[in-house]
Length: 432
Image 1 (cartoon, helix red, strand yellow):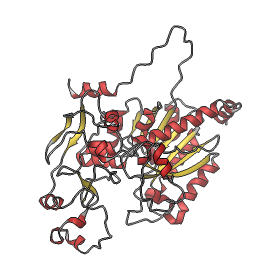
Image 2: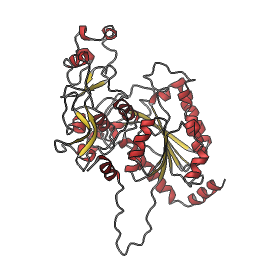
Image 3: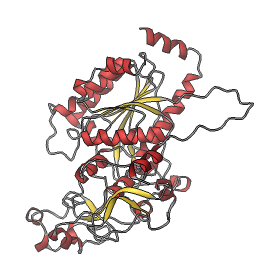
C-alpha cells in the first residue's frame, strides 16, 4: 500500500453507527469549531476525538498548516497571517450566522508571554495578537470559547494583559473562568501547564477535573490558587500517572541515524496508553533518531536517568555552563526516567535546552516520541523538515488535555440547550 493511500485510509471518518428499523430519531449534528493559531492541530485533534467537527483553522506557519490540512481534511485550512483575515468573510464562507458557532478555540503564539523568554515587554507585537482573536469573537459570537496560553501571561505587566483580556470578553457578554491545567492530570505523560480561559454566553464553565493522579511543580504566579491541588486521597480514586515508559516503551528502538518517516512496530503494545496511541494498521510516522554532535554524544554517556548536566565532568561542559551554579539550568542535558514524566516538550530537540536523552537508549527523542508525550495518536503525521516537525509538536496543546476540555464544554452546551429560553436567546443574538 503506498503512503498516500495509507494516510487516506487511516484518516478516513468512521462510518455512522447502524440504526435499528424502529429508531426514528434524527441524527445529532456534531458541535462545530473553528481554530485560530491552530498550529499542527493539537486542540483540533482533541476536539475531534470528543466528537466535534472543525470547520476552519488558521496559522501562519506554512509547514504547520500543511500538517493541519493532512490530518483534518474536513476543515478549511488558511495559511494567511491573522491580520489579513476578515472574520466576516470567513463566517459567510462557512455559512454561519452570528451565534451559530458552538466553540471558538485557540490562542496566540506564546513566545512573548513565556516566563522562559529573556524579553517580556508589554509592547511585544506578539502580545497584541489576542486582539485578532477578539475580532473573531465579536463577529462569530460563538456560544462558547477556549482561549489558551502559558501561565506566564498572568504575570506579564503585573497581570495587566490578563486582566484586559478578561475585561474584553466579559464586556462582550461572556461568563469567563480561568484555570491553569496540568497535562499529566488528563493522561498525557508530560509536565506541561497551560492557562485555559473558558467563556460562555450562558453561564460559567467549570474546568475539567483531573482524571489521573500526577504531581508537578507549579512555580509561577497562580500556581497555588489556579491549579488543581491533589491530595493522597485523590491518588486512591484517580488513574495512575502515565509515565515515559508507558508512553514510548513500545516504539522501535533506534540507534542514532536510524529510523524513518514511515516505520513499522517491532513489538506489541505494552501499556494501556500505548494501546490507545498505536495505529491499527501497524506503522507510525516521524520516528527517526538524529545524530548528536561528537561532544554531546560524549556528554550523554555520563548522564544517568533523571540526571542532567551536573553529571557531566567539568572539562566536558560547554564553556558557558562551566560558570553555571548547580542550581541553574536544571533540565539541560537531562536524561528521562522511564518511571517519571517527560519535561515540557520543547520546540527543538537540543540537549543544551532541555531533557531530551532517552532513559535506556543513547540518543535524543524522535519527533514521534515527542508527539507521544503530547498525546498525538500514531496516525497523526507531521510534515515539513525535521526541525519544523519538532517545532510543530512542541507548540501544540496536548491532545488529551484538549479532549478533556472539549468533553466539559459539550456537557455545558447540552445542559443549557435543554433549558427554556436558550433557543430564543440564540435567535435574538443571530438577528442583532
